[in-house]
Length: 426
Image (cartoon, one colour):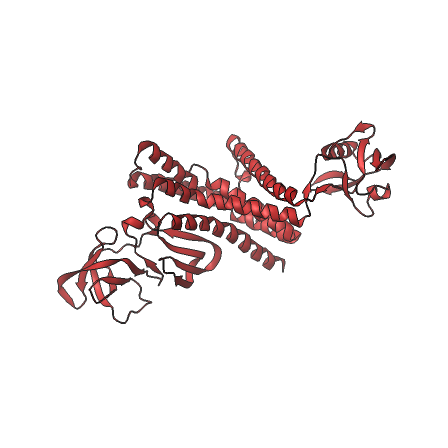
């Protein structure tokens, strides 16, 4: 059961943050007039597809890990029709091609079998070739702007004329489309942190010395402490915040402590002997008290945003440490996510949501790194285009993207192997 629970948690967590990321690109591309040819949930062989009237094909694929968006004009999106390729075409009464079928899995009742000699589905919109059975004459057919292309696996997508391609959109629109993925991860992380704050009943108030809770049968309860008490001093040292209280308890090393406690208008003394427990291999002194919570609606809402911001700062700090002292042990890949998903699943729903929020913020920030294969690298190329007044040539951009992709792939393999050794090879 634990293994199944871990797998389900991993699929939900990883799938959610990737799909939300891709939906950001999808939404802004649509708003920018860019043709989104496919929006897929999952990877691998196709299980289900539906093509909407605006030309986007929505697919569900067998492997439930994330998803992707195919925008017209992006390199990995191309479905080439090379000379010699056998296809079947459907034409309307005016002789204009409405469907080009590359798949042997799909049969079109009134299609013409054609061996391709030449095509242009971006600018001139035509397809030419020999009608099979009549190889003496090359016939050329105009292709409708919104014609359908059936790929080899049976996926139905629109062709991608120049005017609906990614590069044809205004620079500002392309920038927003590239940024929309990471933005959605920040948005998801913030929403989830807000949900966590509401689920836990409020925001910890670390600026007060008032106790929010006292654990039953704990050293604090045995000493007579109650929720709402204010600990104004410990062993004569004044305390005005939660940090002051925890620091004094930790510094005591388990010895009996004299607490000055204010309850209402009365002040009294209480002697508490901390209980020593072991957490993550370290001995920790605990007395069984909980921090006071801010429970107002606005305070909870602000607390969610604040938590998201603080989490982002921690990620940037970790990136700084990685740059100054690189180590594979400071990185984590799918194996690390799977391991952490397992630990989160055992700890309950609140931990799973918190983990998802942190991972979503992490993915958003990592995707903004200035590496050409990532969204941040694309934004850098957009900035260069804005300064130069024209984009880099497709050849140069392709070379940069390929080099960075190969380096990222090597790094991912190294990180995954390192994680595998850390967690599964003893």
